[in-house]
Image 1 (tube, helix red, strand yellow):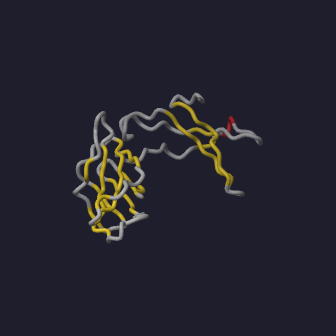
Image 2 (image 1 turned 135 degrees about the vertical axis):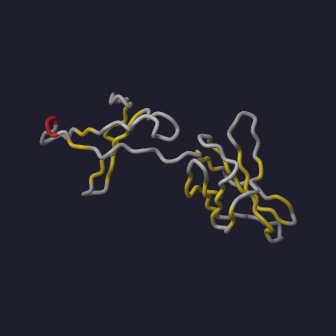
Image 3 (image 1 turned 180 degrees about the vertical axis):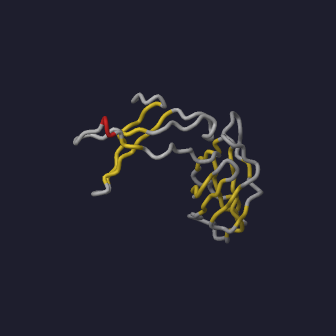
Length: 159
């Protein structure tokens, strides 16, 4: 079954754990990697250009930034093609740009609440377009729990 290791605007690295339940009594001769570009009417096509060290595969040609691709594998032997693996979907884009460190607003904080603020991410620096909102996650380092404290728009209005 394929799994994502990493993705950027120019490449994707997939991990590969072969799961062949029945090889029909013949040894596996190869594995086929296929991708679907996610556009209307597109079909899965074989990926023939990738680095192959069996455990991971890096694809760095034939990808379009901003597109979501589906990938799948199947085993092949003298009996024929095996069943396709489950699909994994991967967006081809660099990671999001995070805002600078958040700051405590002492004037608005109290002994029972904390007010924080941050500067908005500058337009044009985030892959995939403008930032549409922010999510603030709080972690209690004492017990390891975390929760979403804010999930709102770029204007700071909660959803």
